[in-house]
Length: 331
Figure 1 (tube, helix red, strand yellow):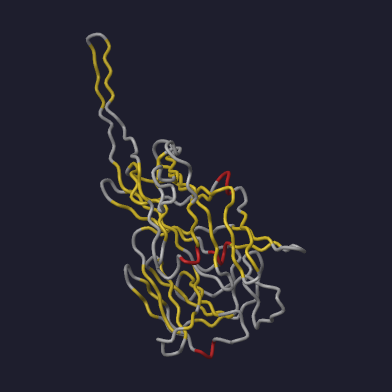
Figure 2 (figure 1 turned 90 degrees about the vertical axis):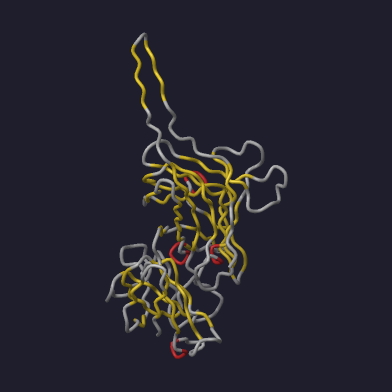
């Protein structure tokens, strides 16, 4: 999967040397602080039935613990405005028009990611929060029934804010992955003429160490009348699986079971960007965006705002993820 790369333009000003003199008395203060390099990348967990879920970004805001928030905007190349990736500029675009970076979240799965910020310079130390800034037209979702706009409540005014902080080491590079987890984030609003879809992201931050879980799924679990198979990943060993309701019992993330001619069973899965630790895995049939197209499913779709009664098949073994490792759990 090709990664979207964004170029960097501009630097972050650091504290300067202040000199003061009054008569014969003078005092000097050297309060210069170091900087580090920050990259932000978008990842996602796939869902059934949607062919694309595109979000339109126009910039990002980074708030260090000390000092003001730093605004990065995506700007078109003044020489060749059609070039992608665009220029990333601190502050407003001065020499060219703003650029909209359209990222299909469903392409950022199974270890793939799309860069929003690539090695921008920020003050070293703690970052309190990051805000992803969206275009007025926040995005769209492509389903078998058509293409529909995605709305984000107050998204173009306040952006999508990630309140969990992280550390940027001095004179070092930091890469932070932001998981949108579309399965938890898409909400369908019933409408007599045209359905409406909201993006209410449950953003998960991954920095530093992470690993993956892979495995095969027995063909007997894949009922052809259901919407499809999914693997839900819950934190901790021996966790009781539950549906997605935007609460503390939600899975950390999820992934799809896909046909795989190279596997022994004909089906496999892959989930990445998991911090080291123990996880409980559960298979569920028919989880995704519900479609009223006359089809019937053995299990209901897992709607994020509803309490859905799902039947889980729990993996016999606990998955233990280690840094840069790949744990194998079969069903």
